[in-house]
Length: 117
Image 1 (cartoon, rainbow, N blue to C red):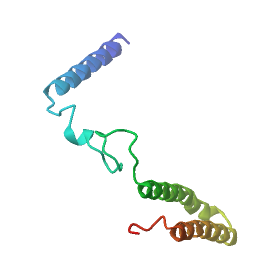
Image 2 (cartoon, rainbow, N blue to C red; image 1 turned 135 degrees about the vertical axis):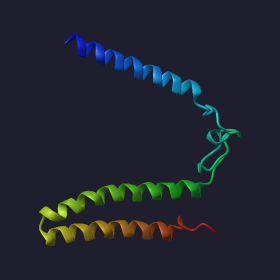
Image 3 (cartoon, one colour; image 1 turned 90 degrees about the vertical axis):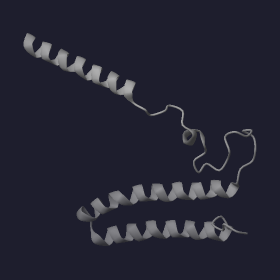
């Protein structure tokens, strides 16, 4: 019992020393210029925070989030296809896709998907 405790303490100490050495010799800078720059966010972080940004960027982001959530709802349907009735499954899947497509057509009719006006 004592031997196992001693051995686990030595392993823990060795791991801590290796992590410390790795952090000391690592050449990765903490403050990088790319980390400070905006990444597809639609505004410059160096300017004032109250400046307006493109509403079209916001609408495209919302559409992306909606279709991303839609994919998370479609994945369980693959598993449900194995255990459910094919008629009920196809009706449910078709209704789901019709609702999504009607939302997409509505967004297109409102002009949210037009990049150039």
